[in-house]
Image 1 (spheres, rainbow, N blue to C red):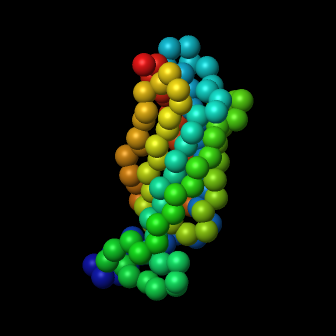
Image 2 (spheres, helix red, strand yellow):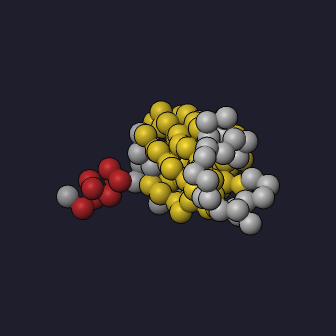
Amino acid sequence: MYFSLYFFLSRDIEDVRVKGLVFDSTEGRPLSNVKVIIRNERYESDAGKMNYDEYLGHDQIVVYTDSKGFFSCELKKSAFLWLIFSKAGYEKYIEPGKNTNKNMQYRIVLKRK
C-alpha cells in the first residue's frame, strides 16, 4: 500500500492550469505588469526519461499580469512548482514551492518598498 501511495503522489500531473491575481498591499488594487516567473519541475525529462526519485525536467515560464492583476499559464506536465513575483517599486515575493494539482490558484499581495 505504501508503494502505491508513493507512486500516486510522485508523478507528473498533466494539463495543469496555473492562475492567479496580484494586488497592492496598501490600496488593495490589482497590479498590472507584475513579472511572474513560474519554475516547474517534472519527473519526466525533455527526452522522455522518467525517474520518480528526482526531477529530470525543468521549465521556467515568464508571464505578466494584465490590467486586472490576472495571470495564467498552462503546463503540459508538472510535479512541483514555485512562483516568483516582481515589480519595480515593490518587494520581490517568492511563493513557497508546492506539489502540483490540476488547478493551481494564487492570490498574492505585494508590499511597496
